[in-house]
Amino acid sequence: MGKEDPKVSKPDNTAFTQQRLPAWQPILSAGIVLPLFVVIGLTFIGIGIGLFITSSNVQEIEGPVFMYYGLTNYYQNYRKYGISRDDDQLFGNIDSLKSPANFCSPYQMGAKQMPIAPCGAIANSLFNDTFRLFYKVNEVYTEVLLDDNGISWWTDYNVKFRNPPEINGSLKNAFEGTVKPLNWPKPVYELSTNPNNNGFINQDFLVWMRIAALPNFRKLYRRISEGNWSRSLPAGNYSLEITYNYPVLSFQGKKKVVFSTVTWMGGKNSFLGIAYLVFGSLSIVMALIMLIVYAKYQVQIDRDM
Image (cartoon, rainbow, N blue to C red; front, side, top):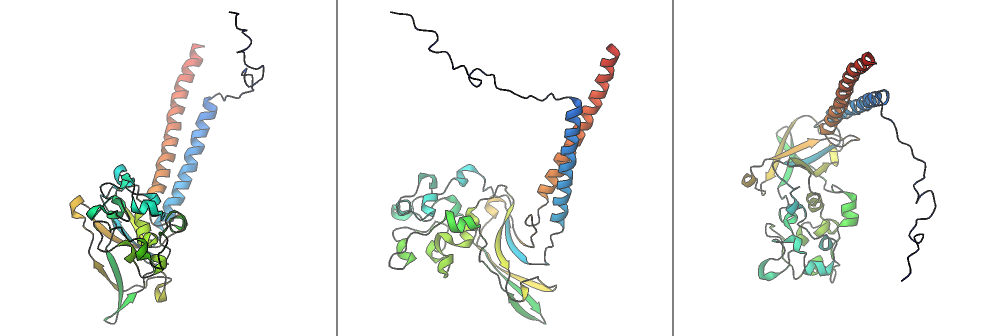
């Protein structure tokens, strides 16, 4: 057997294969690192102050008002809960409607092994308290109009969620052969009388299906954007009528209702501003510590020289 030519496995004589490409590697000296930390710290502190002031200026009643419901000690970010859904089914896929994904277990099949629609733990735990708001003037209560149009994300309503094709013009027929989630009082095709707000594209359902990242959260329930209350809620006496359906004592949780306006950064939430302030302050502190260490050891080095 002949010997293998050693040149066969030799890489091409190019700058890339022979690692001769020009490179730049910064030398991190004190004169670069310390000013960089100070600039980053001041930048983040400035942004944090702006975010915190903006959040603090959100008024809880005045201006176009949004109505939220809130839950505490509710871990929607728990992994088994978060993946307990079938996105193909929620997109209106007929095969997935009749045969939900195993991720939905144990809320995959209902009575007589009929598929649940919508399946999964998220859908099964849909928040179903309802609210009515009244304004009292001269001992007369006037109901404040609550608007549920467009409270969900645009991408959820127009892209991610779809109803299955209607059969003979009926959404009910499209869901024939399925059963409602165990905790629901009525099937998905009866969530609303409005055909543009029914089934998998129901606004309240879409809001709930976008799970929260933290255990204490609030979700948009309604907008107050009609009638005499389109610009603000005037000062006075209000009465909130609550239809209590959603239990929270089993997980030591609490419920709340929040009325708030929004700004360019959203509703009233000071967390982001505080986070920027903390990070900026830590950068400034680190810069000071490194300056002290540098000054101490630089003097010592100069003496040794």
